[in-house]
Length: 120
Image 1 (spheres, rainbow, N blue to C red):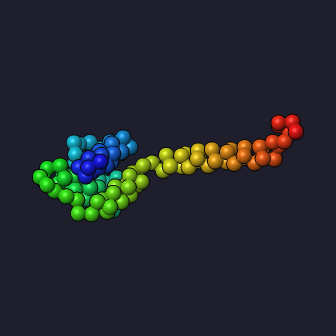
Image 2: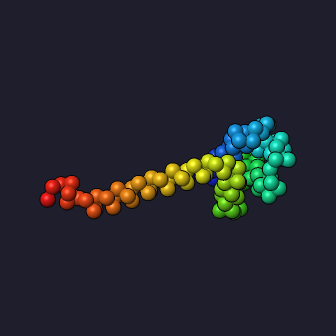
Image 3: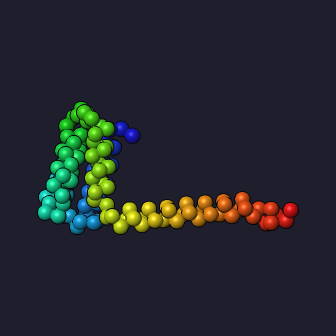
C-alpha cells in the first residue's frame, strides 16, 4: 500500500471512531476533534491534530512525503487504542482467554483419555 493510502486509511478509521463513539460532528479530522474537544484528553487532542495535519499535507500538497512513517503509525495506533471503548477490549480479551482455555483443556483431555476413547 502506498503512503497516501495508509495515511488516509488510518485517519478515516480515527474519524469513524470519533463519530461512532463520541458523536463528533464535522467533515474533517480537525473539525471532528474541535466539536468534542472538551471530552478528550489533551494528549489525544494533540496526537489527533498531528495526524490531521499529516493527512492534509499528504493529500493536498504535491509530492509530500511523511518524514517518519513509523512515528505516524505509532501515534495512530495510540489514538485508536485511546478512543476505543475499554469494554470492547475487555470483551475481546475475555473471549480470547475462554477460547484458549477450552482449547488447552480439550488437548489435555484427549491426551489423558485417548486410549479409552479409541478402545485400546
